[in-house]
Image 1 (cartoon, rainbow, N blue to C red):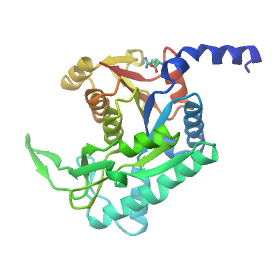
Image 2 (cartoon, helix red, strand yellow):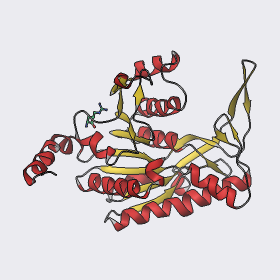
Image 3 (cartoon, protein in one colour):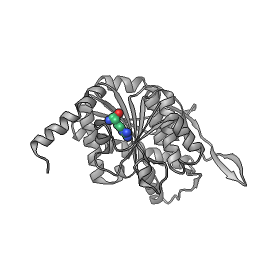
Image 4 (cartoon, rainbow, N blue to C red):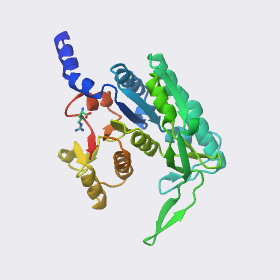
Length: 294
Ligand SMILES: NC(=[NH2+])NCCC[C@H](N)C(=O)O
């Protein structure tokens, strides 16, 4: 166990970062295991409370994939996926919105408020926060790519940061469900990583933190010593092009690149399965994940 002296030193070691990030905005994509496991969930809520009370302005964007799938099953709807994207008819997007906004969002808001954080739940429909349009899935057949309509799966076309900025200025913590609104008022289910990236970019946030179910980026996944603690944008693009970054890591790194291109300062891929990974990444010099920078 730590002595009181050790604890004092740990706090003082964090001081440079507390000073550096005081008053800055940090967008956190909350999903995966950190959202499913109750202990991890509790940890994340405390990490967010800690950030808030040392003067950071956190914003949470949450996912909901497994819960949506579970609820669809309950009502007898099986999900089919095309290139990793859920085929989303009108009934499916209605259920996705119910689960994301009605259940998960209000659950997170409740947990944060229990911790003394004045969290406010939002969906992309609130005050025009997330404007969206249909996203087509790309399918490859005999080496030729074509686009397939999979329904109400969306991509962000515009972020209106007005409401979020007002809430942050008033000391609230916005919690955003990744639902976007189309030109005719229709709802779109959007990948939460991309929503978080767009919001971080639009706000010129200090950081985007992606809580994932991996440690970060490896140059060679089989070799644990090839972990990339830092990655520049040009390197990241090159690694995607050359296949070093592959599979499920591509959209994560692309979300980081998008956030930086749009105006965020840094983007971090961190392991949400690890207790207090947010605090370790932000308040230590080495961090624990992969930091993507300009
Ligand atoms: N994966 C890394 N290399 N992280 C370094 C983090 C440094 C510092 N705590 C920051 O948040 O900016």
